[in-house]
Length: 162
Image 1: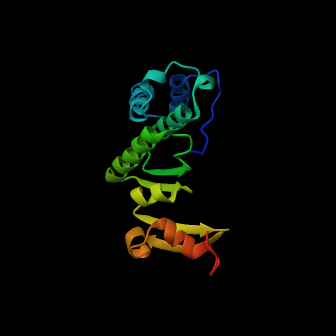
Image 2: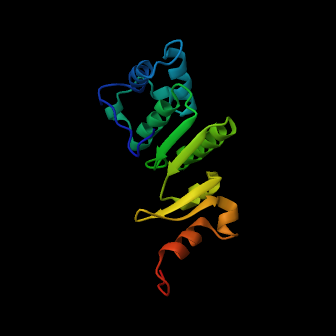
Image 3: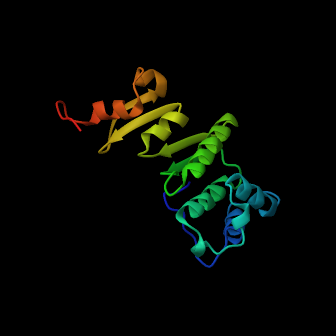
């Protein structure tokens, strides 16, 4: 699970935090080698020894992504994963999600950034105020319109313009 805001003790480093989480998760063979790999996949191997309290929101988010990858989970839940990421971080995360999907992982993403979701999702569910307004294969369900336009048509009251 990756929360919108990854938090851990500020005096820890990405390396110590991930090592601790790896031990909690019972990572096979000890977390050491896998921690370094996860830091690299998240694009922050150079930040491994910096205190978490000194990292930017985007760097912390990448730390959360590294933590998410520990143990090679097959089902992942991401809540607003693009929050705080710069354009390169967003591109990297989309590439990582695509790679994980190709490796057979199932990924649930909660996001308000519909243009990003349209680029990476195969299936979707559109929720508004606790009600599921639509769900299914993305391309088939949208019928040629963008996800933003589809959302607008489903959510905005009839006859109301932006």
